[in-house]
Image (cartoon, rainbow over all chains, first blue to last red):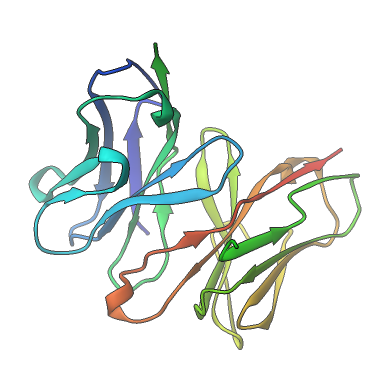
Length: 113
Length: 115
């Protein structure tokens, strides 16, 4: 089974500042990679995913993530934080065709006015 | 209308009671999953089903059972609830086939409290 590590359980940023959330996985074969967001009292919503091809992936709400095979990383960024970005973010991976996801512990983002 | 629905959304019960959480989906997906979310632990897989006749244990299946009544319905049962089963429970679905790349779609969650 895949192991997923999200560095930092809480991140606080100022409105307009860069958001950077880190995710590393353990696998010798590039997996499928996902970022999900959970707003308060809601389910998980897919932000973006990497499957194949271009390693820089753009998602919804201005987020993007870059797959770096050499670093086994899939960090999530947004150039300018908005108050509405306050949520919990989960990185997830699956072995291709395994149809099961392994999740990181999550990172809670707070945005300061 | 939501594609993946869960009932109830909130439930408080007592130790030893039998509880059923229900999940329905209108996405037409063949694969369904149950997870629990605990603070600091992310989501952990309880059970999954790849079609109506296929049920598989996940990493934390002890104390839980499931039923896949139809392609669109997948229920999770706690036969005798205990306090450490207090958690947020999510149902998810996905479609088979390489084109769908293991992407899962989640319901809104059920918050279960066992006293």
